[in-house]
Length: 69
Image (cartoon, rainbow, N blue to C red):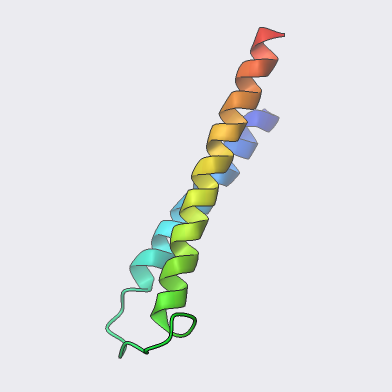
């Protein structure tokens, strides 16, 4: 049950990152710097999705190791 809850939380994090990327594509005037405006929001969304996928892979590996023991 704990494993299912952890996987559910990671999936919510991935969905949140995708939503950040979608919301970050609003038609704002593009600032020239990388760390301000929608560029930062888009980068953070992409990072959240990548970290969420990495956490899901790590969780899967841990589950597999527990099954083998």
